[in-house]
Length: 179
Image (tube, rainbow, N blue to C red; front, side, top):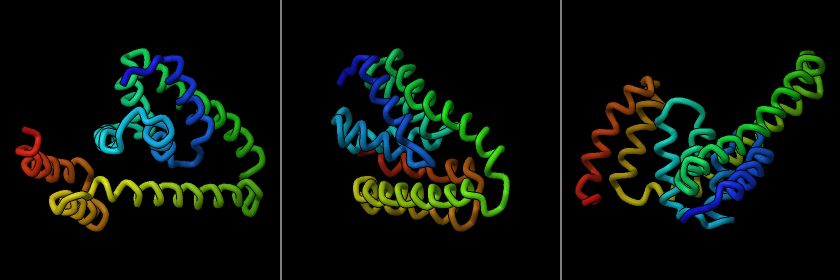
């Protein structure tokens, strides 16, 4: 599907204005898969997986990837500007306000941040549970997910080491299916 870059800019600006405190990937999922139907759930998950193993912020990487996929290079640039400009501008303003108002323990800014943090965790958890049923569709996928959870989550291996151990196994698991 090809989407004109002005339409991508408007859509990703909406995400940029509404994705606060984490959960940006969930907002992108809602926009691209649920509301607009521009990509299937599997296509979105593949893009999100690719962007998670790359350096840099996943939210920005994913927006650039989705925009490029849907609208070529102009679409990627429009999507990246759309998701970053609102948040960066608001973060600058909120940072200035926080340094003036929120540095005292028990201040209203500190309490508000606690509520935002809990909301972000809930949003990420809801999206993860929804996407797990699609991404964990075979015993091979479950085995890989468990391997990464154990090595990264429990044993605290460095991420490059986890990827070096999991990616070859994943390629071996799915090589025949891609032919």
